[in-house]
Image 1 (tube, one colour):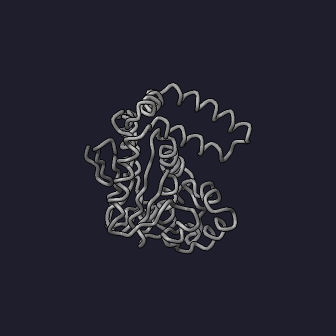
Image 2: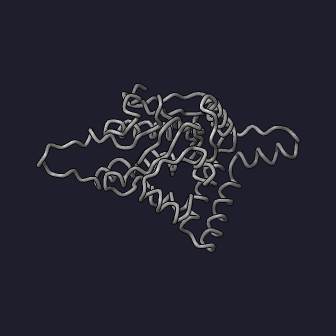
Image 3: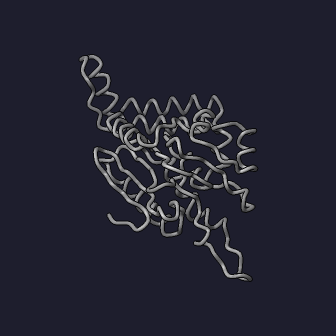
Length: 263
């Protein structure tokens, strides 16, 4: 399938989604959002796909919203940014968080504003050492969106999240790793090889179970202990009925490598 602002490639059970506006640091436009919605629907509907890898083309991962896509003439009515979130950014974050497969993100360059929070919405984030993360919203009088005010405090705590959001300081990939914002910072030249290797590994694993792990950890942020214990019970019941659980036990007993199918 051909897109103008993104690329979608599939192989070895992995869908690789590449933001493709390198001359604009892969900043978001309405067209890109529409294409992302379509691509994620395609990925979700394809049973052969068992992991998603998200990255950007060129020297930036994503610079957030392309402000020229919202430009208005002086004196014109101010655009409804809340509607932009409702129509574009919120569905994107929800789609990534709810995708029933692991989502790996390879941050190849600057990730600013919604671009940073897009990365944080993924399950496992790798970043090139030259990459950086910026909550740039405060620079133009806006509030962190795309889940930023929810995800950041849970990644780094309230004090650090507040400073990142109010100061808009640039954070290196290595500092982001040290603070627990991402999984790992890697050498620039090794980023895509390592991210692809990780995605291909995850695509061979019991991905139905991984999707349930994803749900359990996501939901724990707002559950009480009792609610989480009940959720674990329900998800474990579901996991125990999968083909992959039966295959994993059979392989363990037979002392052979399992052949998981993601079902």
